[in-house]
Image (cartoon, rainbow, N blue to C red; front, side):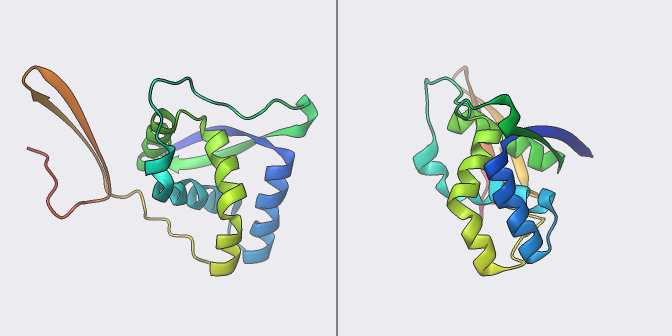
Length: 146
């Protein structure tokens, strides 16, 4: 199942994205998905609790663009998890990823992997009347899904 959504992207960020798109020949959608996927490696230091969702800094209305993105169901759920765990809008996560990882894509040319999200597991457990959720972004050697 494919899920279409829209991201609110600053024109400077979009310009950088499109520069890489033309440089390596991947689609904008693929680059966006790679960048959002790439941020998973920073997840330990980016996780926040007891905070409001942060959005991008305000700017003139004319400096923003809507960008359509198509995710499969796993990619979409992953983005929602990141939003919840990082306390950042998906658009802000993308802006952060563009500023941090865009050169990595240029250096690795054609390094995008469209299958990072294919192993997504969400497990609900009740332990001593406490509801616990486990989120797996990949398959661990011994998942605790009992």
